[in-house]
Image (tube, rainbow, N blue to C red; front, side, top):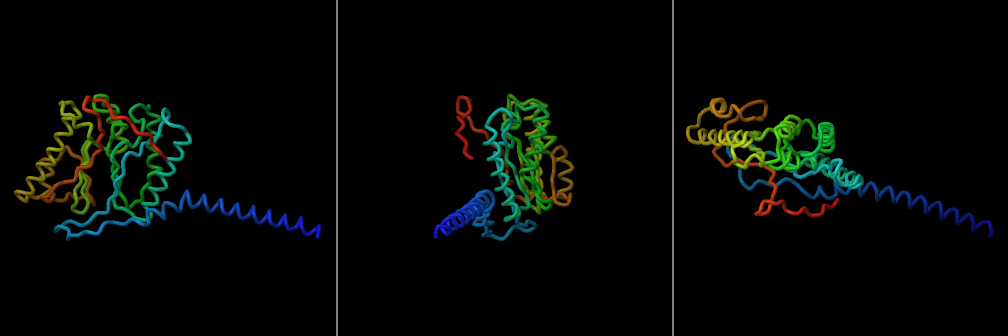
Length: 273
């Protein structure tokens, strides 16, 4: 009997430690991986209530915004690690379960893009594409935000060109996918003060509007319209083919930064991970 008790204790401890270890592993895997699938599998694509217009097919598009990847100035390293991991897992889970055809990122990709030097900005871009990686079958388009290059009167040509070059994101983009047309706009270039950035943006938006009106009224060939009116606008189309704009409202996608009536920025609410 005295020898049996120590054996029972050891057996109990061994079983307890083993079960505790297995339990902790399960909790970790569930909280860090499985929870995203459990949550997102309950979501699905909307069912269309009407038949698409002739020449237009449905497009499965995902819209995300304000990823605010932290830089070297603000935030704690642990907060940075946790939030970026969670965004990465949530995004990759959506790619796996829902497999969108296109992803639109509506501004503020970076939290400190307006302040960071070249080396840090390059690191920003690499991290963004690593965390929000898309398969070859999915296209991604980004719109600039005020945290990426600054508010209107703080934008320099260098900051604007840097983001445009590295993220392939001009002030105005016309994206055409199977007859569906999306216009992506740099909202900081809508101040209307006649600066170079605003003038370019307004002109390109006007060209898109004119092209839509010309096609709606005269039903001219879209290639001719594009050649005459959209020569300065970046066009992204499926299979490098320019499609005719349908006489319907175009969705405008942009990032909007709100401010008070006196021009001061609204207070930032505490972020949670």
